[in-house]
Length: 213
Image 1 (cartoon, rainbow, N blue to C red):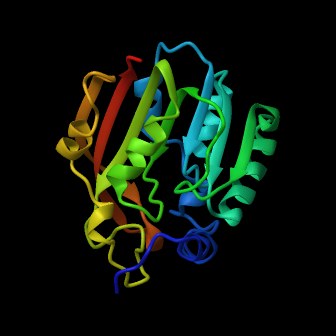
Image 2 (cartoon, rainbow, N blue to C red; image 1 turned 45 degrees about the vertical axis):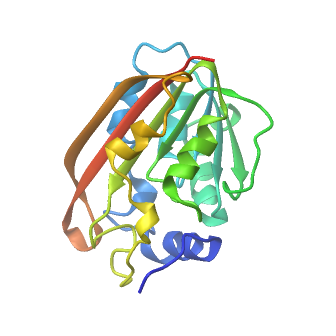
C-alpha cells in the first residue's frame, strides 16, 4: 500500500511505530552527519525542518545555536520538548507544530537542516522550499536517503511514493550554482538499530551548500 506523508501518517508513525522501546527513533542520538558538517561553524540561528523527536535540535542547542524546530506531529514535538527540558536546553529551542508545505518561518536562518524529513510534497520541491529560508552566507544541510522496502513505514506494510526518493544527482542539480556553493555531496551506507532488534541499513545522501546571495 502506498501512503501519503500527511499529518495522519506522521501521527501514526510517532504514536504506534516509534515509541520508547529499544530501536525506536524517539530515543535516537543525533544524526552523525550533523556534527561532521557543522564542525567549525560559529553558532547562530538554526532551523531543523521536520525535527521529529528533536535529537538534532537538542544537539544544536547544546552547541550554542538558537534553534527553531518544526514538525507536523504534535506527538513528536511533545517527546522532543520533554527531551530538551531534561537536557536543560528548553530555552534555546522554539518548537513549532507546522505543515512544512505551507508554513512560513518569517525569517531566514544561518543554518537550515533537515534529516529524513518527508512532507506531503515532492522531495526536491521541499528542499528548494527550505533553501529559501537560508540567509546569504548561511548553510543548507540536507540528509536524506534512498528508500527500500524497509523505509519509514517498517512493519506497517507501507511503500513510499516515488517522489519521496531522490538521488544525490537530483539534489545537487536542483541547487543553482549562481545561488549556492556545494561544499559536500556524498552518499554513505550505515547500519542503524530497527524495531524488533533487527539492523536496518540506510543509504544516506548528504548535501551541504552555502548560499551565495
